[in-house]
Image (tube, rainbow, N blue to C red; front, side):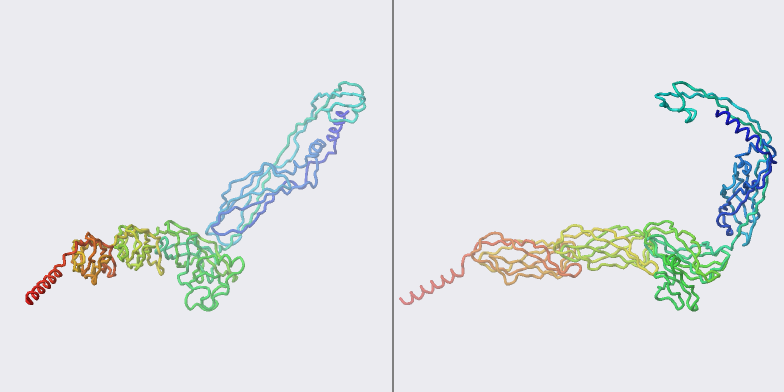
Length: 621
């Protein structure tokens, strides 16, 4: 029976050969550093320790059969460290910030990683430092007591037999081939005894102190930005910064360059700019194109470090500018000056980075970590158009005077204007000079409106240009409106009369009804049928607005002309305010043609002839 077999097996375990409870490789904690054990002054980093239980099943001696029966198949209990408490103790220069850590149970062959945050003092010197890893844990020392007892649990299994074969499903106990020997239908009952145990173990606490050695290296070259001085840092302009850095490391940066990296929207150059193709003798071959430097005059050949290749070359060549400072010893400070072309318009604090590229103590080209600092940039200058006055007329030249205001002091400033048809720019730039913030200033331009222009307002763009450092900067264009005035107008006053068939000198009064004085004006009348003229122009001289002058013309009218009012076109050619010849819009000159006059002279001649004929006749009689 199965229950009988199980009971016999338990008895065999209990009656196993007894030996003393002792074992060779008891739980023992081993620890080592995972990763780097090297640190620098001022570091605050995690120290990763691997904790390992070094026990293994080498030899076990039991005290009696009871112990042997209990631990048989449970040997791992003897080699497990329980309630492991681990703390890392620092010293004067190394502080441990992580408190004690605990592991409930640590079995052999199951290493555990523990992180300890340590802080290295700035006053620590380079060398080896020993920390103490304090470990306490419990291990099994003895089996105090062990009792076994049985619990009876009934169970049943229903077997359905049909045609001498089993068609039912065996649920419990598990399938047994002997069931095929059963005949008929029925129920079979089984009774099982479960073996329970009650035991007590004795534990003993073990303590270990494990030395952990770390190494503090000399701190490499590391830059601290002490001061940043900026000049003319304005959006859209060119400015200059001087950066003072200090070497916080323990090593000397030999033949060092200070390299400036800029964010998007900024371009940097060294104070003394020289391209790669124009560097002094002794500059290393392979200096990245576009990397500008400031090299002291007269620096001996060979003083410059050989520039790197492969990955390092890529790092350096991505820099915007480099400034040579020579040897930078520990604690030494140096200044580097750079030009900044600021292509952004909005003001604010923008981040830049500076690092050192240098030769280390082994002559190897090295670069320090980048140090970030900020520069304050002001908004780009803003120009406001206060007013625009136009003296431009259709088909004539004229002046456009623009009054402007700046919110920033500007030097060496000028204003440009641009316009498109029907306007053409005759003088496109006006020099202003120095501009004071908040003070109005004027710019005057000459423009011409073509004959196709209409008396409306046309757009034009105003652009202010000023000097920033050694470059000229253009601000964004500002749109203005240029009013084109109508053509100069003249009014023809008077209505002279002339008889059909008559030739006569007629006079018109020409009045200036425009807005400016005309000079050297000449009136010209357009002759059409039935009129003709041998003198269709009349000089009228200078006319101020509102003034008038007489213009006389010698005109003939055909004899068969119909008596009525005729309108002839009269235009004035004159010099405008700019001294340019211009023509007015045609004005109407009204002439009254009257009926032809009787031929009184012919009548007189006929009368004379008749009288003479009568006299001759009378004399002959």
